[in-house]
Length: 322
Ligand code: ASP
Image (cartoon, rainbow, N blue to C red; front, top):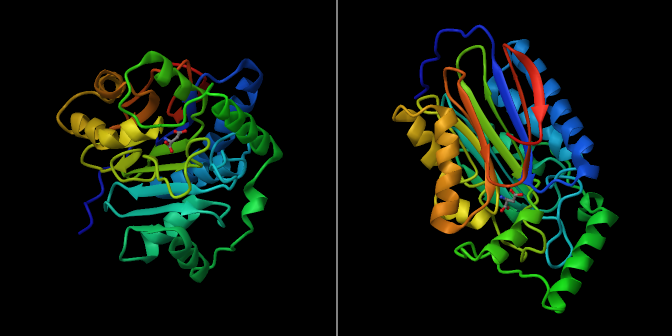
């Protein structure tokens, strides 16, 4: 049953992120430009009266096409040198959701997630089944090599060399509170996401990722799992997370944060509390964007940087830390 829409709000809101980690100075401009473009495209959808779900899909598509980020083109590679992508899109008015994971032949997994949301009685498809579903609904299947950049081949090669020399760790196990192990996960979190509130008072959220560098093929992170790296419900909030996926999954952190908003905590405080809880409970690192149905929002991260952008009644702005 569809949740009744709310009284129209004066101005819609769109928030995007492009990962939370120690973004180096020489990559700062690319990150700012990328989130800015996504913001502009997604916000134009909202100001023309489009839905929050349309705006999130449009913004995340721009970020997937931008090789700066770990989503779509230019994603981190698995240990066998391929790109494997995960994405989720969720509509807060209906709680309809679409997820895909471990897809290798789709340029824009968020668009496949949209097809699942719109056209399937199911919620989640993986691997070749997800690709077949997308192809049956008109998406082109591409060769995996079209998503692989030479930059990423080199990054993987260097990482695997360091691993062989015992200079890097590959566990991504998530329970480790040891600061050195945790710090090694700070270097690679460029997942993208967006949350939106439209003129009709409806929320949506989307998250898309290439996952973690050197992940074992078949590994799925938090980003595309409902309530972990992404969630939206008009009765609570819309959320997208980035960071070390395993701890975020174990805490079902997206739903944890939106539940707090439902219980009366402001999104600003709930975002901070979620990131504090992530670290206190499992030593996790990451960032969060959280948007309530009244347009109040919160952003937080415990990494040195998080690429973010907001557009609302006060205009567009972007930044690299909160
Ligand atoms: N959360 C993502 C994952 O673990 C990685 C990221 O945010 O960059 O797959």
